[in-house]
Amino acid sequence: MTILARLLAVPSMIAVATVAVACGGGGASPEEFREQATEICTEGERAVAELGEPSSPEQAGELLDRTDETLQGVQERLEDLDTPGGEEGEQAERYVELFGEQTEQASGAFDELGEALESEDPQRLQQATMELQQLEQNEEIEQLAGELQLEACM
Image (cartoon, rainbow, N blue to C red; front, side, top):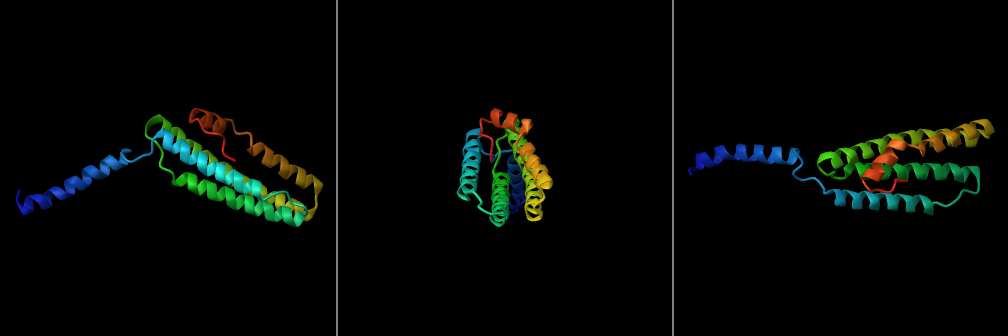
């Protein structure tokens, strides 16, 4: 093969490699995704548990901020995971998408709860608390977690 022929073959090899990667040639196995997602969620849950219980409204506000930061970190790490190919990959991607949506909603609810604590308005505090509790009850994310054999994250 001449040097010119070799040089002309390089773009073809790059195109083949690009198609292979784009079609899922480098994705994680379902087991790898499960192990990594479980580790991320366990670390996040542990970090939130270690924050402890607030003893004052000021500490509660700080706790909410740190919990929100932890959730954001878990979300970013889940988004960075390689997902498996096929149906399990679609389920994993949807799970991560829903977790992100739930994290955004929780962030807003944390802000509202923090403001309610500052205002010392019991009705506003009750409403913000109910909003957070409703976030915990997402049937689709629980169903996907079951199908992916994951514990629900956070």
